[in-house]
Amino acid sequence: MSAQADDTFDIVILGGGSGGYACAFRAAELGLRVALVEKDKVGGTCLHRGCIPTKALLHAAEIADSAREGAKFGVRTTFESIDMAGVHSYKDGVIGRLYKGLQGLVKSHDITYVEGTGTLSSATTVTVGDRVLTGRNVVLATGSYARSLPGLEIGGRIMTSDQALSLDHVPSRVTVLGGGVIGVEFASVFASFGADVTIVEALPRLVAAEDEAISKQLERSFRKRKIKALTGVRFASATQTEDSVTVTLESGDTIESDLLLVAVGRGPVTAGMGYAEAGVTVERGFVIADERCRTGVPGVYAVGDIVPGLQLAHRGFAQGIFVAEEIAGLAPTPIDESGIPRVTYCDPEIASVGLTEDAARETYGEVETYEYNLGGNGKSQILQTQGFVKVVRAKDGAVVGVHMIGARMGEQVGEAQLIVGWEALPDDVATLIHAHPTQNEALGEAHLALAGKPLHAHA
Image (cartoon, rainbow, N blue to C red):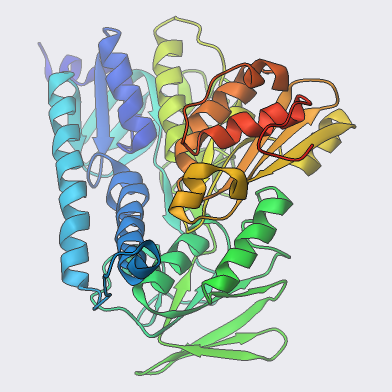
């Protein structure tokens, strides 16, 4: 076989993160010839600089809090200190095991894995160094990067999540610029590790994409944890010395700390990739794709963080599988973006799926809601967590949103996704038996109440 034929594939995938490798694996399972191009490591941001390492830090933070709070459970524990070298060893061990598993899956799927920086050199080719890979189809999956603000240079005591994941010490004072998912997760970690934390957020509330009731509960919980949140205030500038960094707000107020974490979102990795030159529509750096992940160029698809919408690993993963099946001719059902579950792993944890109350009112006009307080849930009382489960339904209709806050709520979002995805009525869920004592009962109790038959709740 000629070298040219060797480099001709059914699919060439540019980017080996969640969306790219999921597409590669599923396509290979469907008998397609696949090339996967990655400049760094398979697994992408999620495995190496995002989801997995941050959640490992959050679990270490939970252990630290448990050590501090043992006495209230009748267990005499004391908190001594955070050993950052030990934390990183644990975190890197988790990443290493998952990475090794992914590498094995690449080999077992018989995928042509190409290491190097690839660019889209035409609608059917990806160039990696001197090598040109030709694809009947091309999938763009180049992911995202940690953004900063204009004029705010990253370096020294000013860093993004990328650098914060490798800190060798716990700073005494931390300012977090941004109160979205990344900001509140890192604020939670630093507070548990013993730092004084201040969050600066320009929007009126933390985690502004969530239901307003969730934001209010998070802000209350953070105040109890002595995490200071300044909302509705705008950043002006930051200056640093050898010993500290000073943030100046537009009001003229200043905040001095040991570290400034810039958590203002993630931008798409598309610059210099040849996308626009090949005819792909790019707006504000994002690749525009339709509900079938098709760009405007026939045979070129886009998945993951480069496509406008939720920047979540599991969204990219689902899109990657969808595209593989689409190319294989299976005509899969398009992904319902509103049905994608969302989890923020701070303490307390936030989990949601579907429409917020405000969004539901815009869509359906009249809605009904119910909040079941975790104070009535036995397992939540055992865990000593506070929060609630909020259910949103169209008036006399299906459940269109579930919003939860409290310890371990992320583990409940699977059933919530089924409820919303299957357009269940509260009465449908009320008939299901939820094991006792579990936090999962809180979902059942909320639906019982919304169905007009509250048990451990007031109507």
